[in-house]
Image 1 (tube, rainbow over the protein chains, first blue to last red):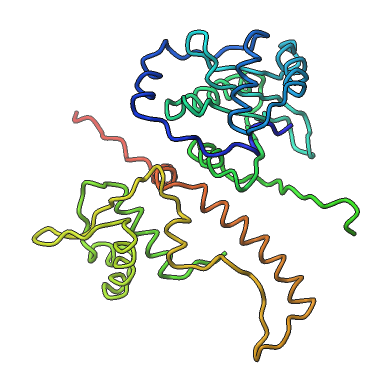
Image 2 (image 1 turned 135 degrees about the vertical axis):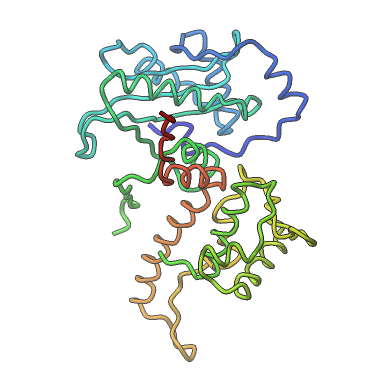
Length: 174
Length: 146
């Protein structure tokens, strides 16, 4: 699953007035996703990627949003009052690609109108805390090299290139 | 991956200036710190000035000052002023046509270039300053007078 990470576009410019209004809203909280949040999650994803993927998000919600704690996978949202302003999906994967258990961030997105408020940082901090509680000491993610917005975000959070190299091929080309 | 000396000088200089945007840093100070000739450095600084990344301040205590946005300016923005990442095509002298081995090697080199470009493009000056701080030795503890 790579939703959000490989398709995020640069945000639309946010006016100073709008940013001020957003920052004046209720305090930001990060919590587990609820069924009632899904419409807003779908809307954020659609506004960023330009594509509404309702059935896909229903499946993601069932797999990650309804997972039991022992399954070590999470779907969390950042909320300002009732408004969902971002989300993150992560999971502890054991021996994926031969590496010891580590925390994977599969998707992260922030409402383009709510950026520059530290929401992505809060979401990632939540993932780090959950991964640490699950006993893993490494966080990984994967995204397209053209996605400089999110690449820069992860870089600013201290992530560096890891030892895994993604490879791919067009089927039927050889 | 090897950067040209001018590119490295530009990166050193910009990082130095961006670490304290209020401070005017003399070119001689940077030349001395990195062991390069002031004349050589002057050409690099002129290019950075022309690109609007630094500005020169004249007069007593003058020097150069960072005027870019450290949270937006990436290493690639600086590197692109001095290096060409546009093509990895291997060309033969005398206009001879490229051989299949040239094309195959070119595609491998292009893969390396694209990865390098993405890496440089994703690291802002602000992130870089954080990495520099992380690499700096911790200050020695101040001992209490007995």
